[in-house]
Image (cartoon, rainbow, N blue to C red; front, side, top):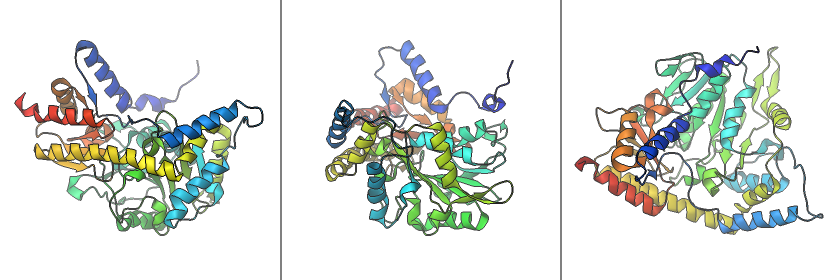
Length: 410
């Protein structure tokens, strides 16, 4: 009988959000009367905006006519969407990208999980801690994380990101090949200024490392001097790959569209010491393993960059951030220590003293019928913290905070 990839067997338990879903399902079966409010997984609740829907309808109609029907699209994305991204997200902010540096995909999660295929088998990986689990699990599946010992992988380099260091993780204290950064940060909801981010860019340049920068929540930034792209930092195009998504920006979680930027300047060395462009490697990987995002979806994504599209999605983002403000201020009034919720749709709070994050999860589910995300699921430094999202409705958000306010009375 053939052998399987043993690295999968080293993964602890199930994927975090799958475990949460399992626990909620069991609880719901045991308590069918419970009206559960979900503030856990970062899924949107508002419908796609009119400009996006109109563009999608028009594109679907085109697919039904012989003259405008399209089969396979370009491997890396249609010109109209790539150019809209270049202009709307980069040129408008003083960043120039070549056309072939932008790659359209079906999700930032797919890209940040697949990008590790470009790394050598023995590449040393650094992650902020807490961390979005996909960065860790995808490298663990490839064998780069080592063994899971206690609450961490013994080959990963963890960069603590907590209240003690004001959520500014240190640069690695040893040589690493890859640093994963996510800002605005998931799960903590915190951000880095341009000056703070430049420290990582400079370190990567000096130490021959690459940064994988997940900017999926860039549209939620409100604070001045917080970059929406790592390429706003001098020198970043030499050392950084950036992943972006329409999922939270424009409600595409169920529609699936994203993009990754791989500048030509970003290079690594092959086993013979030759310099290799990662752009060329990613082109080959995409062409081999991906057939592209459908035409109607790419037309829908391009509509995000129209004047009406920008206006409409800003209204949606503002609504989610209003929810974030309600959660943040309500929890603070109730004595919780809270972070985030200003430049991101996530609120990161300290759990009551003496409780673990999973115990707090059970308490909220049982007493308040609220689902959140235990901080320990994001890494060892996440223990003692808890994440709530602002992606529910205004009514449900207010109702959830009212329930939490009565928690001490229970």
